[in-house]
Length: 430
Image 1 (cartoon, rainbow, N blue to C red):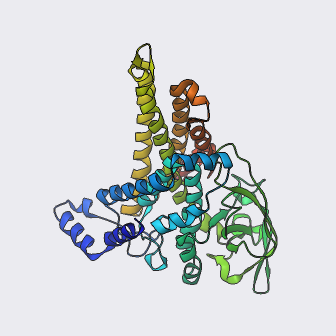
Image 2: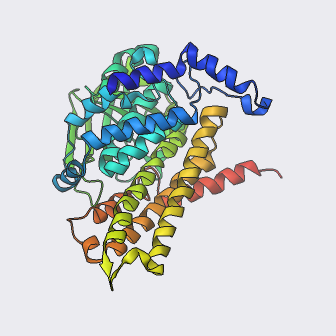
Image 3: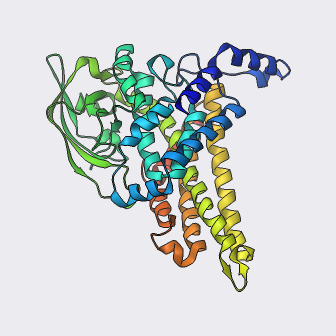
C-alpha cells in the first residue's frame, strides 16, 4: 500500500494529471478554472480533485482496518500508552508528510488531504489521531512553513518516515489561552540560546525527539519578544517531569516538560529571533482547520457504533431504530456530522484552491465540530442504553476523546473570541 500511495500522490502532481486537468477545465467558466497556490503549500502543489481525495480516503481506510483495529484502539485507551510501532507504519504509508515537499520525503499535498487522513485515523482511534496531528501538523508542517532549507533537510526526512517523533510546546501551567504570558525564557549565549522554564499539556512530549518550543527572548517586549526554536530532546537539561493521566485521549502521550539551561544553537531558531508569534499565528489557523477533522472522525465512529446496534437491538418485538425517538437521535447525529464535515472541507478547499485562509472559519470549523462531536458521543451512549455505559463498547471512549476538542488547541470560548475579533477587525472604521 505504501508504494501505491506514494505513486498515486506523485501522479497527482505529474504531467499526465496536469494535462487531464487542463483538458477538463477548458469547458468550465473562467472562475471555475482558477486554482491558486499559496505560500502555505508545498512546492509544485496543485489542488486535488474530488476523485483524488476519495481515492486517498479509501487508502487511509485500508490502513486503519489493518493497523488501527478496534482492539488496538481499545488497548491504547486502556493502557494509556501509544503503540510506538505505529509511527513507522504511518511513515511508510506516507501519512506523516502530507503537506511537506516531495524532496524531503513528503507527499506535496494540501489541507483537504490532511483533513481526510486526520478524519479517518480519528475514526479508528481518537488518541492515535491526536498524536498524529501533533506530529504531522504542529511539528512537521511548522518546519515546512517556517524552516530554513538546512532545517528541512536535517529534520523533515526523519519526521516524515516516523523514525523520529515531533511535538510542539507552547502552553504552560500559567499560560494556556494567554500564550503571551509564557514564562519560559531563552537567553542569548555564545553560539545560540539557553532555554529555561517548563511547558504543560504537550502532546507527544514524553516521546518526542524534536519539539518546536516557544520561549521569550526579550520578555519586556511581550508578544514581540517571543522566538520559536527547534529543540532536540537528547540535549542536556531537557526532561519530561511527568506523563499526564488524562480523562480521554488516553495513549496520546501528554507531558509536562522541563528546560534547565537547555542549549539551542543559532541554527535551530525557527523563523526569526523575536518572530515567534508570527510563526505561531501563521500555523494556528491551519492547526485549527486540520484538527477540526478529528471530531469528524469521532462523530463517524459514533454512528458506526449506534446505527448497527439500534437496528439489531430489539425491544417490544421490533428493532429500537423503528422507534421515532431513536430515529430522531440518529437523524440529529447524522446531520451534525454532515454539517460539520461540509464546514471543515469547504474551509480547507478555500485554502487549497484559492489560497484563502479565513481565521473565523478555521476557528469556526473546529468550534462547531468539537461541540457536535461531544453531543453525538452522548447520543451514542444513550442509544446503547446499558451497553453504552460499560467499557465493552467504545461509546464512553468516544465521549472522553471528543471532549478534548472543546479544550485543546484553544477552548470553545477562545474560538468564539477569535471569531468575534475577526469581525471587529473586518468592520473597524465602518
